[in-house]
Image 1 (spheres, rainbow, N blue to C red):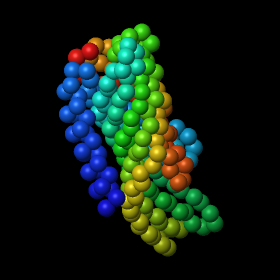
Image 2 (cartoon, one colour; image 1 turned 30 degrees about the vertical axis):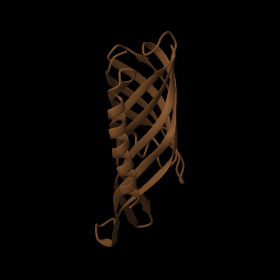
Image 3 (spheres, helix red, strand yellow; image 1 turned 90 degrees about the horizontal axis):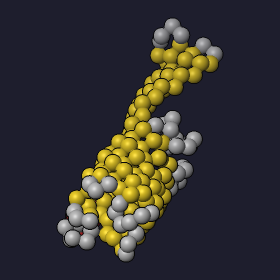
Length: 206
């Protein structure tokens, strides 16, 4: 139920941003993203090293150099690992396949160094992000001769919605926006921190 409500809000927000982006004073962009996981907790670079996704952004200028923006996006992270422990006369093998999808909805500000929607800029965004994790585990304990002593299989999906923030910088051309940001999504088992690169195609007049 919580997931359905969140994605309903995501869909409505996307329609709203797409509608207001048609105004002459604002610009809309669609971007391809790559995320590199950081840190050493369960959401670390060893668990979910690299993710890919898309984001949609609306930017509205305020004055000569400042702009406000809203961003909706999603990234997909995948992990397949093998753990083998040897003790006594047995070998324990655990194969785990898991995925993590992050869906942030954030608002923020952007400041251009030279002029509005041109050249270098710095930015800061904050909001909420859904983290959708799923996976399955196949654990087997066997002797060195290959006879199985025990085996278990588990699977499940979990969705949480948490606070997120993202400082960043980039360079804006006429129709292309290059950006990099440090994104942090809070969680009960530690924050999921990523370094994200975005290349966006920009629509609308400056």
